[in-house]
View 1: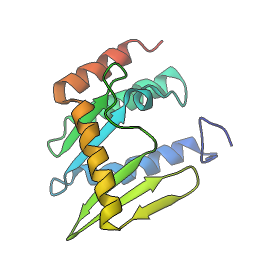
View 2 (view 1 turned 120 degrees about the vertical axis):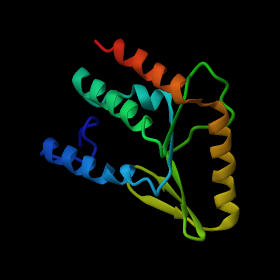
View 3 (view 1 turned 180 degrees about the vertical axis):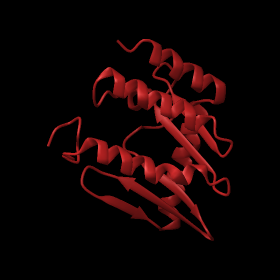
View 4 (view 1 turned 60 degrees about the horizontal axis):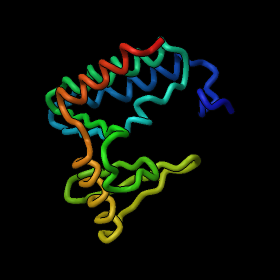
Length: 147
């Protein structure tokens, strides 16, 4: 398995098409989304410069949607909490679920005490992040430096 292609997908065009298809939910104005990325995640280069520019352009495009908030946590800000692993807090109809991504499995967290830990961590991430125009300017500056 290659690090630039963790799923060992042989047809990258097909993989990209599937990913874009999954992202159509972002255009559903009945749903709200908040994404927070660390600078390291935003700088991760899983392929050639063109791919990186396309990824950053996509972030800028998504950030412009009225139902999306995008935050970037830069390396030069104090880390208010550890950035150990990706997780998603899902606010569903009457229930909150947290999914935690590991290399080989997606873990679901349902217990209120455990969910509360992720909510506190998310709040600390929010405090550390740049938002809106500041985050978009940061991404644009980073994109301009790709060689």
